[in-house]
Length: 208
Ligand code: SAM
Image 1 (cartoon, rainbow, N blue to C red):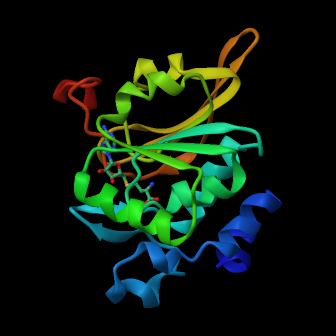
Image 2 (image 1 turned 45 degrees about the horizontal axis):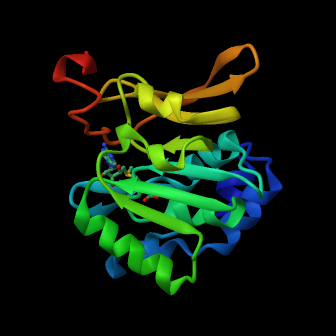
Image 3 (image 1 turned 30 degrees about the horizontal axis):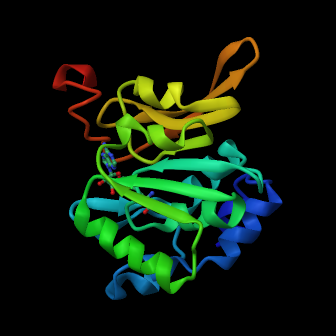
């Protein structure tokens, strides 16, 4: 997976490649999907949600570029796979999921893998995690029509926020960076995610 799907498609960050080789993706999937764990495709994890495609996990992690000392926030825990990857790269990971069934399963996986530097929260991630703000990096693994303002507000100086922005059918991966001169924005290609569901941040009209 690492050689054929990640390195060959342009993922250069060695730390990201090493961690993706080490974290067993099948542990984050239901047993009947274990045989497909290393295919470069998103897979269903129940409740109509998905574990992201390995290439997209690698792309978003490389765009976030977490350092050892960083505290990072993930919105959309899902299976817990992305949080587990981040937990090997950063000091502490805060992850928020709105579905209790998925969160309970992800917490059990973190326990079994001995990942003690992940803190979880059940709720609407569009509000961020104000008690732990500011965070050095914020990764949103669900699509939004626009950046929820609390997330940008909770981004530390020098920090990056990576989020798929677009409509329900297609989005672009956008990277916001808080620099001394303000927020800088760059784009990293097309992606397709399930929607970020937030009464707090959006109305139906926001999706266009
Ligand atoms: N990061 C996950 C993984 O590694 O398996 C994949 C995330 S999945 C593509 C998107 C997740 O975002 C779903 O589990 C969904 O329930 C969750 N979600 C959607 N809206 C949310 C919100 N407002 N706050 C927190 N989680 C949300």
